[in-house]
Length: 307
Figure 1: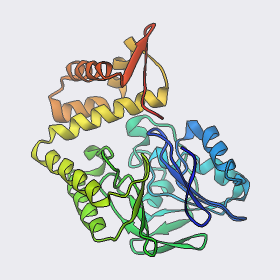
Figure 2: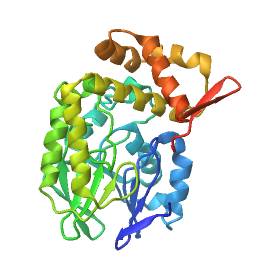
Figure 3: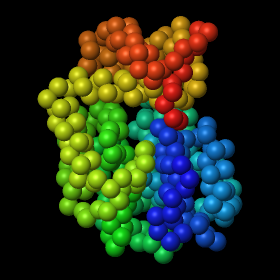
């Protein structure tokens, strides 16, 4: 998908699921919102350069939260440009204290680099993206430092991972805490009060059915509360696929032993499925193979999900 201009000089770039979507304000002092995943930085650079932006001139990066798929290019771009980086005050604390657990990086075995965060954002702040004023709304649940950006005059919502069109971001209760589902519900309730014409999410394409997406997300969360095993299954499926995207291809016989060495896989199975490690793994992979979400050849496996 080609970049989409959503406001004068401000472009939306859709990526996949390993790389979060991002935004570029084109000017002599460019501003970026989120910078995708570290190992795909070359493509990120090409996409931004395609809009005529020189990364050495970047003035500001705004991060919607500190997960790896949204901050991946931060350090490289900051090293080249000396740019400021702004994020919610909780995320700034994680970065300042080099807390790679609360950021999820170590928990899920993700590639990421620390950087200098110069500006702490608070709920209700207004941040300028070029001439465009966006309101900062704090929306925890998926991430302790999650924010969305709202352009009130044009009714545009940059929803990051707080709201997707037909799915929702993984919840990691062992990092985010046992009230994460309730926090997500409260964040959605807050968004519902906004007038929104178009939503630009952290993954997936833009959409206009704002209230429909809210309804679907609430229904999913209510199902999680009724049956917590659904949280565990959703987490296992999403992070298995995410791990395959990170690794590109994996020797099939080595994948389950690798997962057992991570923090997240055995802990998630212990929490929700009574330690049935291989049984859950085999059931999930059988489903993925049957739907061609994961494919195999010559002893290797990979995912067909767009990174």
